[in-house]
Length: 605
Image 1 (cartoon, rainbow, N blue to C red):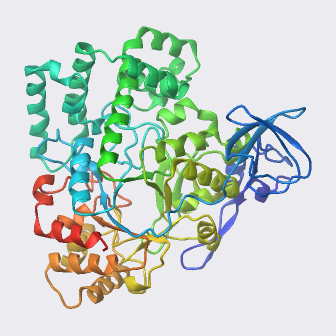
Image 2 (image 1 turned 120 degrees about the horizontal axis):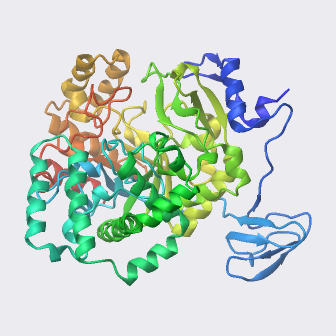
């Protein structure tokens, strides 16, 4: 009989109220089957040995380092062994990963910054959606005010065909980015289009008239302009060298994008012969449509350039989603890595009483380990690119994930554990190499070991005014602190009661005691002030005075927005999740007295 614990399947857990919950035997059996467990068998062995400077070794190890230097490790890992991924030589070759154990964390860190939903931050120059040009201009404004960074919602790619997924936390790929964020006028060769570009730009600007972001319409005008630019001014040597350096990962993504334009964004609905990226049919389509494959690769190069430009204006913190679309590019390119019959979510808790299903297939932890964590390394490197740091959404997922059988409810799930020590070692290595810090989103039901390991690994916690019992002055130093998040009420929405009214109007269960509790916390901080703008200002002033290394204010609060960007547990028919732009152009918002006062508060001097 298979021991579920050896495979990481946790048949019982304690919920948010402390009750012991047991997973059904059917769900446990299905999880074991998805993991590849056989009766009485063991998980596959690791393909990489992970060590740290100073670790002892019980036998000599001959290695060739990444730089091609041959070394013999005896007794312990000495200072002459560099951090990185090295090749073990001899009778049993393999990979040696040398990790610093701790993530990069600058001494004396004390910064204030902004949380930016980039799609929502439209300027007069936008084509219906906030773009990387808007981010650069926002960064110049924030840097001039003395603010330290911008925390971005994920910029990861969506499938380039209608209906385009709105949620930045449900991308088609965690390795590649969304070309809808391109500032078209900044693309090399755009000026060649002349009057054509002016005509298309007018259509793009017209999309700003509606507050709701229409990604399908944005894609039509932007991809039209980009296609015309590529034809009129073909990419040159710099792009071709960059494309070659990206290797097979970019080619598969670009091939997926080309096929998605023809057959839709879910590969499960494609002709069967195209569902396997290694099939002769896929290779044939890629040859016949080589120009379009090159086009989608070029879009990624353009995003790389524009993101670098925005990062030069203001340090950026990226956001790593917990997973990807089940029918998207990452799953298509590497199906064996995913447990396709499950999706990731969360069991019921005090603020989401029905639980959550995020519709994302989890990685199989044992296949990930057997492959030396190559997919993890690629995702982390993409997240750290051009970034001062990275926020990891649902950091508990590095330790365990809640697997829900596809088609079941969040109450039917089971926790599956991951090789957290290895994952944290690789995270530390990539963080140090990038010179970028790490913040773990540790909200909700958190095992004690998670925060213990975060502290030991120099990963900052994530604390919210809405959830903390004490005043901001009691918040921990090693944290990024905020008032709220994209999934929770804005300050104005909570204070005025609009958020509760919105929940009731669309039939979402309202946690009355929870809302009353966080409103009382806000009232204590507000100190008798009544006007939303005054309450917002005092809340962030209290936050900025906290000991936390990082504090962050949302642009929604600067604009006194009453709607949440996302209402968990709802669909687009009930709430415009991830589609609400800020109610005024970015230029107007940044000129407002409240935004300027918040920028001064965030200077933290």
